[in-house]
Image (cartoon, rainbow, N blue to C red; front, top):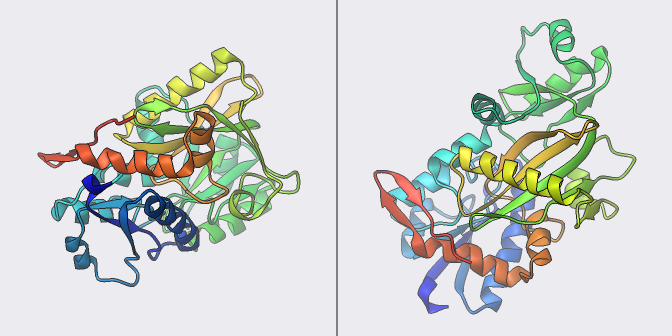
Length: 316
């Protein structure tokens, strides 16, 4: 693995997803070391960012703000250090749920109706437009942090308060009743769709169901027909490409009771823990976790900077 040189595995950070990032990053670091890669842990919350200058490339496993929103990508670009995943623009756009939805809607991709909320919002008007239930989300958070399901008008303001404690920008999204799926992107391809079935006692696929519960069910095969699976994979590829995402990532979606698919969000630095979906989907097509990590890192071998546009070779 000498072709990679010295690799910084970036994880930890200061976002609300720090604990998840620590688990993801340690798993990636251990896998790369097992494959003979000269890799080291690098936590920007602990080490000065200019210390990255001593590395040949970076594997980004920083979830949330500061790591998934274009900030660390910009630093690495300025230092001319190849890095995994999406570039500055796609990272920043993908981290903003509202603007991602605006883009998807603008090019005709299906995404659930929504409204931005603030201190002056007329909640009755929101409910009249979007109906109930609603899902309330911080616009710039991941891992379902700060999210709440609202089933009655009285729950809307407390849900807004909860979300606004995590982000200055909050959105209400129409609740889609149906089945939840995720599509992992790797090297320009959509991997087998995963169906997500959280425990019956939780309202949605929340932080507990994602990282702490052992009774969340993941379906591979997804339970979709072959035609539906291909439809969702193509939809996810279009959504991923629309935001300019590259290398690896994940698109989350719902299928409503009429069989229609609705895009929820894009994840440009998904989790890599023992509960995470990217390793699960990769395993379904024959990747070990270590091989998956090397495949993602191999994308940096095609890294180039041309007029501030990042291009990553699609290896594998």
